[in-house]
Each structure stands twice: as structure tokens, then as C-alpha cells.
Image (cartoon, rainbow, N blue to C red; front, side):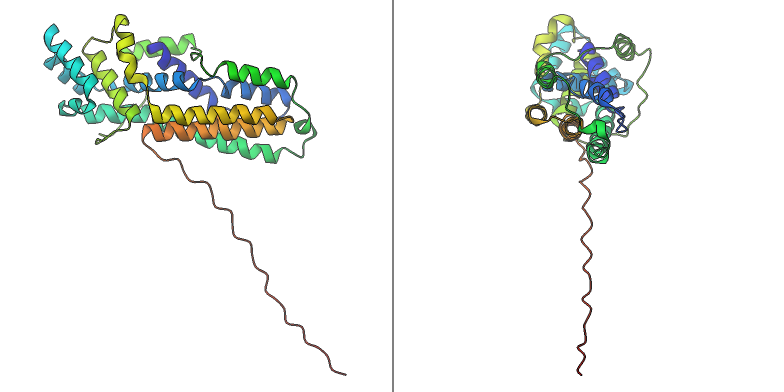
Length: 292
């Protein structure tokens, strides 16, 4: 799960850095390659795990859990309670701040992804006067097949970010975030991150527990939202031909829509679409007739 957290963070860092200042077809191809590189289920697993890494940084929460789980029997019983109901954790000191840290690790990057998508989508219109943007994308079928191939795969992991995630869990290098206490109820993604963090704090998130704990890395609403975004992205690519259409597909579906899904899963609402200005009505000028 630490590896999945690192994969999530790597994808978000690269995707929010996509610049709308496209200069040629190769810059579009590179951006599409970055934006497409996630599977909906893998992205959710990574987001929950990354939120848990952040929640573990609240030492008040960690200490309270460890004091309660002072025997193997107590810890085993607590894990059963945690998996059965996230509200069990609300009684522990620091739980609200740990939940705040989980959301703070997820929500801002989701909003940045949403904003990046909006800017990239606008670029699809802005660059249409440039000749290269109207040229047909090379290997249309190949780029669609490559996008579809990653829809069910694992997130690629940057070795440096994996090392950083391990250091964060170990308390060696905390994440550069802070958060105010967050009152329940929580979204499933934030609640699952808090549950996973609690089980890890008890020392019960071992390798042999992965299958049992994988229930915490699922979010049906977020999965359906991301699956729709990915499906629309693929359908858009299937009919897109010139470069500026690929830019639109990427901006609208791979970035903007994905950002909406992740922001709502983290418990924040993205800014609404700007309302276009109303057309200015011209005043009618009265015309006088001349009588001769």
C-alpha cells in the first residue's frame, strides 16, 4: 500500500504540472502519455493509502491507539471494530486532526488537477490558429490502445517517491502538510484512510494482511465517477484526429473530470464552471421619416 501511495502521488504531481502552453505535436503526445497513466481502481487505492500516510503523522492519534491496543488480544479486537465501523475511531484523541490531515493530503491536489484540466481544455481552442495543431495525430489507433491498456493496471511508481513514502510512514520525513481538526461524518475515502492509518498505528497492517485490508481501498462512488471519466476519455480519443482534439480530450476527461471525482471523494466541491457573459442587447434607434 505504501507503493500504491507513492504511485498516486507520482501521478498527481506529474499531471498537475502539465502546461497548457503546447508548442508542437510531441508536447501534446507527452502530456497525453502523462494524463492517461492511471487506472480508476489503482488511483483510489493509492489515494486512500496516501491519505493514511498523512493521517499517521498525528502522533496524538497514534499514541491513543497504541495505549488502547496494549496486548495482542486487544489489538486484534480493535482491528475488527475498526474494519466494521469507522465511527469506532472517533473516540480516540486526535482522530479529527488525523482525518483533517488525510483530507489535506488529497483535496488540494485534486483541485489543482481540476484547474489544470480547465486550462488545458481552453488551450484546445486557443491553439487552433497554429497550423501544427490541425495536423492529424500519428498512429491514432496505437495511442488509443495505449490509453486503454493502463485502465486496469497498477500505478507506475517513481523510486524516489517510494523512498519518500517509506520515510513518511517511519516518521523520518513527514509530509509537508498541516490541517485543522475535521469533524465527522467523512467521505468514504477519508474514512478509509483514517481506518487504514489506525490499523497501521497498531502494527497490524502487515504484508500478510493486505488482502483483508484491501476492503479499505475501495470507494464505489469514486470508482464509478473515475470509470466514467476514463470511458469518456477513450471515446473522445476514438474520434479525435487533429492534435487540438487530443488536447481537448485530455483536458476535459483525463484531467478536469478526474479532478472532479477525486475532489468530491476527498470531501470538497470544485469551483463551478464560469458563466459566460450575457450578450449585450443593442438599443434600437428610432428613425424619423421626412415628409416632403
